[in-house]
Length: 299
Image (tube, rainbow, N blue to C red; front, side, top):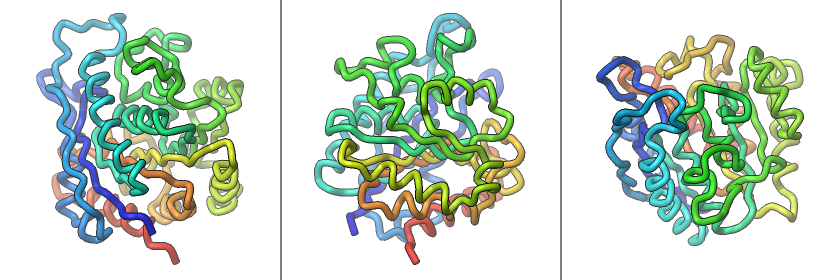
C-alpha cells in the first residue's frame, strides 16, 4: 500500500463571509480532524501545511468576477507544487482543507503529471460559471467549472494548462435530487452524475464500482477524489455552509468511498467544507474523521 501523506490546505478564500465582518471557519478543518487523530489513526506521514494568503475581498462587488482570484491563483500553484511532489514519489496525498477551491490545486498538479479523472463526492456539482449564472464570485462553488476550463483566464488557464480536467473524465456522486437545472447542463456535457435518490434506488456499491471501472482505463493515468462534507445529511453533518436535507448517511458515504480509495488508480483525496465554528462540541468533526479513517480500512 502507498504511503498516505497528510497535507493541510487551510484556505477559506473561495467562500463568502458567513456574516459581515467575519471569515469562513473552514480553515480550521485540518486542525480539527488532526485533533480527532486522523494522521495517527491512518498511519499517515506528515506533509506539512501549505499556508494560504490572507482572506481579503477588498472592494470587490458582485459582477467583478471571482473574489480573492489573485490569492486563489497563487495558492493553487503553491498547493499544486506540494501535491505534485508526492504524486511523482508514488505517495497518496490526503489534503485536508479548506473550502472546495483547494481542489484546483490537485487538478493543476495532476494536469502537470498526465491525464487524470475526478470523482466528486458532493451535494453540489460546484459548476457555476459565467455561461449559466450572473452570480459568479465564490470559487468554492465554482471549482469544477474552473477546473474544466470555464471562467476567467487567471484561474482556468494557469501555466497555459487549461483545462486541468476534461469533462468526460469527471464523475459526480451525491447531488441532492433538487439540483435539476445544474444537472441538465452536466448531462448535456456527458458528465456522469448520480443523485442521492439514485444511489438509494440503484445501490451505492453497484454504482460506484461501475464508475471505478470507468476510471481504470488506459487513457487515464488515475483519478482524484474530492470529498465535500456537505454530501452527508445535516442530521449528522450540520457544520457546513449549505446543510441541505436528504443527504447520505455515514454508512452510505463509507460504502461509496471504499471502492474509490481501494483502486490502485486512485491518486489522492481532499476533504473540504466542514466548519468547526459550526460544531462547538466536535461531534460532526469526529464523525467525519471516523468516516475518512474507516474508508481506508479495506475489509
